[in-house]
Image 1 (spheres, helix red, strand yellow):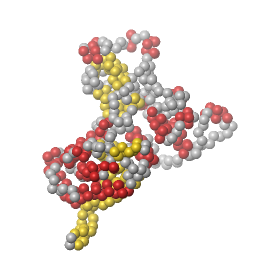
Image 2: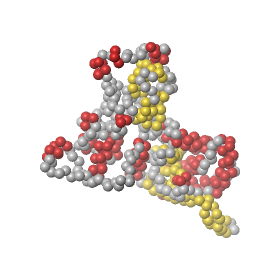
Image 3: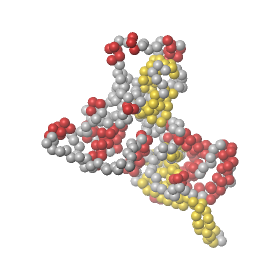
Image 4: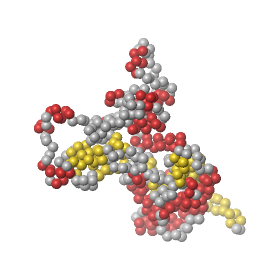
Length: 446
């Protein structure tokens, strides 16, 4: 039997692990090359892993809900099965010695308890020791502890409810809640209970929830977004500048071309590609906005990769990236925007399409919002927000004097990291954006 070890592939920058969300093949199933074996989820994107060989799936090394490192073997495939070895089936259960069956390690099914962190133990997957050397902590627990500045010594003092007293995510979140409310952590639970037996233990203050209210758990993506946003405001010194934009020329161009474009390409022509083109041009005017920070070093990026915030049907958010936007034509940007937005909403993006952004755009106007102060998408240092386009009476300056006219006006803001972008640079960048939009060539073809 020729066995092939299927591994978790590289899933993009900074992604070191993935959660198995669903097995698409069962043990014993025949697999063709390029057939999807399993669905996985990371903090970046959900995707499927295809098989690189044909054969029979003989062993799953992880269960649904398990957290698997990138590069780890997650399944064994018998490639001899693809050459007509269908008769070489696995022996029936009654023919197997009883002690052999008992010796086979089992993998806990975490789908029944999503709060329990992966605890699978197989001959190919060894659990790492924590930095304290006294207790195992899952990557998720370590990540939360890092965000909350909890040392390994403090983690060791928290009682766990998982298998072998391991600390689960819920244990850590409950501990953090108690700490915020001033409840002192218990260093030795058994001794504390024995010593306090005659005394009634103090009760943690609970929030009173009326019967009409519902309690729901944040889904995985919302938890990741929440952590990312909090980390951003704790990392960067956020400053936001605003300016009005006369969108007359852009609106005229879109009205003139949208119907023909829809008939020709079967795609909508939106304002978003125009905004992205303007950002790319403004970044070329002021390249020091296209930077990121690494400690005390400023990394000036050569390419302009613009992240585009996309709202998902479940009200979560994802930010696919239009790479090398400064090298694309307006039609190329339109194609990229429509393709990425469509696949984002049906969860068909690949990890590399949501990493590597250098500046971001969020279109608040899609929902009627006039203006906003978005949070910087780390490790970037600037994010542009555009509001709804509204007709307003404004003063127009002409050689013959001032006049009042009805114009489509939009509020635009730039939120930037004041550690590396001062008000002068942020203001000039915003002014460049406005100039590119107000002088837009409304006669250009698309």
